[in-house]
Image 1 (cartoon, rainbow, N blue to C red):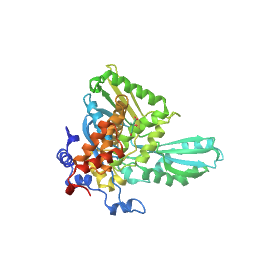
Image 2 (cartoon, rainbow, N blue to C red; image 1 turned 135 degrees about the vertical axis):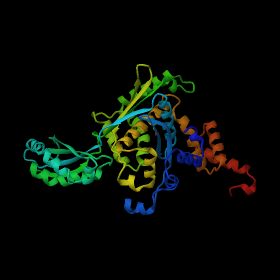
Image 3 (spheres, helix red, strand yellow; image 1 turned 90 degrees about the vertical axis):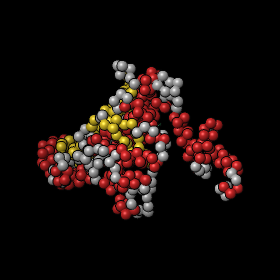
Image 4 (cartoon, rainbow, N blue to C red; image 1 turned 180 degrees about the vertical axis):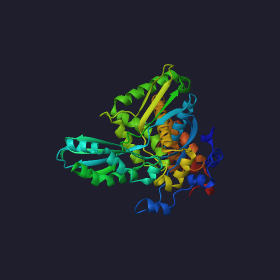
Amino acid sequence: MPGFYNKTLAARLQAITEQTGLSQEEIDSFSSLGLGLDSAEHMIENVVGLYSLPIGIATNFRINHKEVLVPMVLEEPSVVAGASLAARLARETGGFIASSDEPVMIAQMQILDLANPHQARLALLAHKQRILDFAQTTDPVIMKLGGGPRDVEVRLIEDSPVGPMLVLHLLYDCRDAMGANTVNTAVEALKPMVEEITGGRVNLRILSNLADQRLARSTCVISTSALAFADFDGEFVRDRIIEASSFAAADPYRAATHNKGIMNGVDAVVIATGNDWRAIEAGAHAYAARSGKYTSLSQWGPDKEGNLVGTIELPMAVGIVGGATKVHPTAQAALKLLAVQSARELAEIIVSVGLAQNFAAIRALATEGIQHGHMGLHARQLAMAAGAAGDEIERVAAQMVQEQQVRLDRAQALVEEIKSYLPKERSYD
Ligand code: MEV
């Protein structure tokens, strides 16, 4: 969608209408709040209203050889532009190639008060089929769709302040659902059987957000010619990005910020599609620390032709049915815009956007710094906060950037100055 960035909001909606099969009602759900108060009242408790955020469309994405328009919901400037830029550079060399595991969630059961935890563990494994057979009965709908329990694993935690405990993992294929309700129901229902088999006492029964059976991964190649910009040549940019990647791999302080950049892209799509972004955040950071040391979720290095290659892998427990994906009209429209047929396809898009976002951030950081790009947008926000309207916003913002004084007090002074030029009848007073 060339020039999408420079179009007016109305022209962007027009372009989306022309390019996609979205109905007028679905398109309208972007510009209105989408979610009605009636639905909101049934979503959480003590509802007093609605809270809105911008939804933007990242362009240029080619993922698994398909063109994808990516809806992103967030408050931070530069993220949608960064993702679209990265996608434009990557598409010259084929775009993103992504894959994912079967949508298998882990649900945990904590088992205590065991006379002999080793013996109890073997008893659970000996009764694996019985446990799986019972777990098949708790969600007939998912079973009909081809999902259901897949395996049982049992770990012994020998040393804890409350003594030894067993942890049973029920691995459950949730198909196109995120699956929290399905797996929580299954492990709650299994309590009596597990207590009978082990002679112990079951305490917690809940899914794990470290959904490491449900990973999604993506890769892209960016040529050195695509990396060159302004006064920076492509090899220089590639090598600085690789240095940035090594920094994040080695240092948890940097890894946290590097991964935050990835989550800027990931969360924005997770939220747009009505999925649980806290679950995705928890899973991502737990996965980043799986070796015992927190590290980066992505890696950047050269290939044998000297191109830059990025890779990413993280848990991606998202659904396209159920929960807010079903209730929120904008989430429904976002899913339709993405044209995904399965939760796995959505997961593959999300991790690709995370990788794109990460590239855009470290490309800027390793070259001109991010303040350069941020400042223009930040200046416009300050100009509006200082009371500038219409053309004045650009004038005030441009002046502050040129003076390198992007601050609210300067914006206020410039707005005052403009006001003083206005004829009396056009003044704001
Ligand atoms: C800001 O929201 C995200 C960055 O800090 C990410 C990074 O440092 O890689 C720019």
